[in-house]
Image (cartoon, rainbow, N blue to C red; front, side):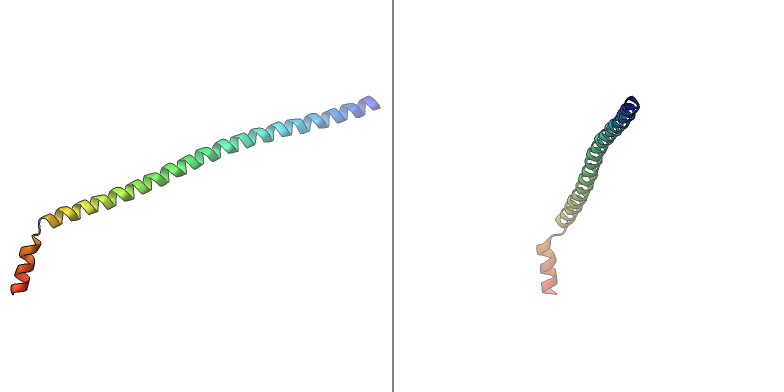
Length: 82
């Protein structure tokens, strides 16, 4: 009877050990997935910021080039004399 009880106890312990190993593996996978997700989020966020900066700089450059074609002094002189 004692041998049967001992076998049942070992069976329970081995089952719990197997569950523990499975949970540890899942935690490792979750940690890896979290790192990859964080990296992807940061890359996507940086891409959006870079795209916005390029758009701002492009518009600024276009406005600067457009203003070069207008001679302010002559424009305002004509407006004041009329």
